[in-house]
Image (cartoon, rainbow, N blue to C red):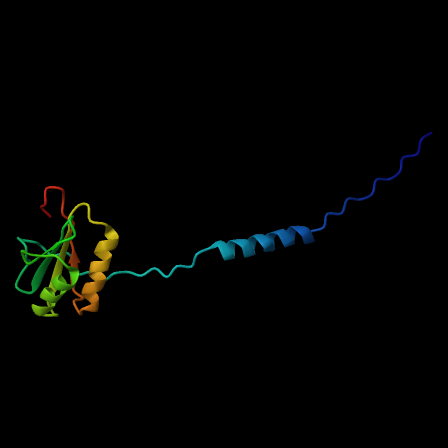
Length: 133
C-alpha cells in the first residue's frame, strides 16, 4: 500500500501584487499631464451686416497671406492693426473673422494681442471659402 503525502497548502502572498499596483499608480501619475487649460472669453454672437456690426464695433479680418483688413483698410502687421483698432476706442467691440486657411493658433495669438491692448470685447466669426461669413 502506497501512502500519499499530503500536498502542501498553496499560500498566495498579496504583497507582490500590491507592489505592482503601487508601481503602476506611480507610473501613471508621473506620465500624466496636468495641463492648465485656459479659455478665451468671446462676446455673444451678433447679427453681421457688412464689415462693421454697428457704430460700437470694429471689423478685423485675418487674411491667408498674413495681412489684415481693419474696417476695410489693408494693414500688413499685427501691431499696426491693433493700434488702429485701439485708436477707435478701447470700449468698442472687435468683430474678428479669419479666412479659411488661417491657423487657429494665429487666431488665438491675435485675440491675446487684442486683450493685451485692452480690447477685450472680441466676437469670432468664420469666413467660408467664398469669402462671405
